[in-house]
Length: 330
Image (cartoon, rainbow, N blue to C red; front, side, top):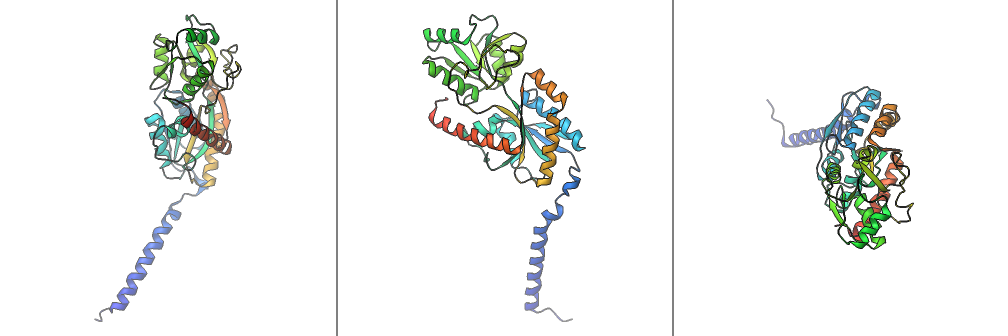
C-alpha cells in the first residue's frame, strides 16, 4: 500500500485545521436562537438585593407578569452582596441571549463604582430594559418626636452641634449626600449613622436609636403614622404626606442621583429578542396589580424606556463621579 507523502500529509492537516476553525466560528451562529421562537425556555432574573426588599418584591411581580406575557416562566434568583455589585456583575457577564436579566437599583451601577472597584463598566456592559420605580426618600422622625417640621430639627442641631443623629442606608447613597448638602447649607453639624440597608434604618429609627433617618424603607411607616416625615428628599412630595415639602421646595440646592429600580440585561442581546423583553416588561409595568403593589409599598411609578433609561443613568453616573471627588461622603 502506498504511504502518503509528507507533502500530502501537510496539505491534509492544513485543510483539517481550516475546516475546524470555520466550524468553530460558525457554531455560535448555528446555535443562536430564532428570535421568532424566543423564549423557548425559562428566563433567569438575578435580583441583586435581599428577599423581601422593595427591589425584590417589585422585580418578582414584574417577572411573574412578564413571564405570562412571553409564555415562559421568568425565574427570580436573589444574589445580594456588595451593595448590589455581585448580582449586577453576574448579569453583565452572562451570555447576551435574553435568558439572563437582572432586577436592581441605581446603587450598583451609579453609586458603587465611585466608592469601590467594580468588575464592569456601567456605560458599556448593560442594556436597560426599563426603569419602573422611583424610590421616594422621606426624612422622618418618630411620630412622638418633639420636632414638628424640618426647621425645628435644624434649629436644635444648630444649638447642639453633632448631637443629633440621622441614619441612612449607607455611605455615598443619595439620601446621605442630600442630608450632608442640606446641613452644610445651614452650616450646622449632625452625626451621620450609616447602616447596612433599609431594614436596619427602620429598626434604628423605630427604636429611637437615631433622631431621624432618610430612606425609602421608611415610607410604609410614614403611611402607618409610626413615623412623621418632616422633609422629602425626592423630586416630588409623598401622596401619604402631601403637606410635607421637598428640600428643593424649602429652598435648598440639592444634587444627587435619582434612586430607581429597574430591569436590565447584558449588552449585545439580538435586537428582536431585546424588543420582546422590552415590550413584555412595559406591559407588565402597566398592569393594575403591579400599580397596586407600588401603592402598598408607597413607591412612585417612573417608567423609562431603554433610551431614556440609558440617558438618565449616564447623566447620574457623571454627577456621582463629580460628587465623589468634590464632596465629603465618608
